[in-house]
Image (tube, rainbow, N blue to C red; front, side):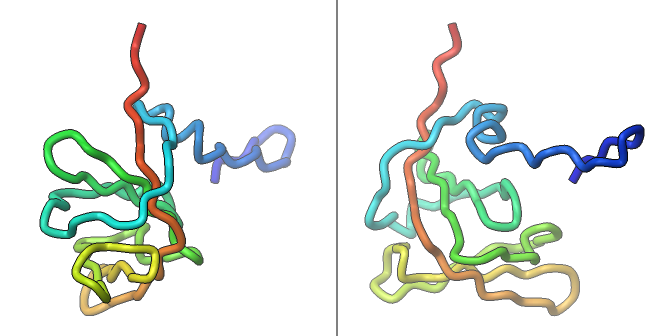
Length: 118
């Protein structure tokens, strides 16, 4: 979090929509499942949101049920599924430095739309 040194009052956290817009995305519709064999990359947004890359040009926002502190220093990200595809009933498994593992349960999966630049 960024704080203001002069006033001593912490600044407001930047809303998720603004952080995603800075990366060129807007939040789209919810999806029921992602075909796990197509997931080919990821990037964390914060301790509760992860962007998954699927195929060449699809991106999805995975929001977790609770903060997953391991996302701050994650080295590897995996997932555990019940039906073979990634759904909101599944979990991300975060591996941080050393042997640290954290189970992070998924709340929602939404499409990310590329913001068209004028």
